[in-house]
Length: 138
Image 1 (spheres, one colour):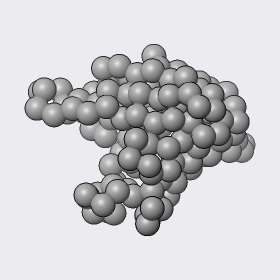
Image 2: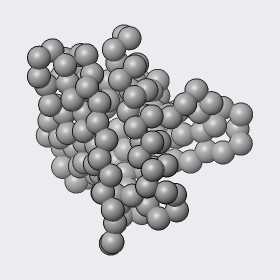
Image 3: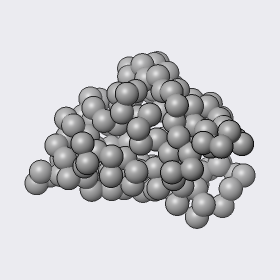
């Protein structure tokens, strides 16, 4: 597959164990997994192991649009790294690095062809920023 990788990151003022838990547990995923307040994530499932499946339902709050974000894990190293493949074959890697009472989360994902690279980067960054805001406020 001919793809363009996009990398985003955020520095989160929280310990690695907290960041990992908030990033991977469904009860937290539903609280932050959307790009702006006009969307929400009403449900999430996460079987966090090699071969396990991730599923998050993402919907516009007005009901005008929604989709399932699904992936299968290729590699999981707790509190360090996860690599997964999306339904359409695109790969994503998420790295967690703790340093000086904060945790850096770096996501590299294969871009899709339907939307501009800038739109994709901005959308994924907005979701990661929402995760940062949620994690630091709880």
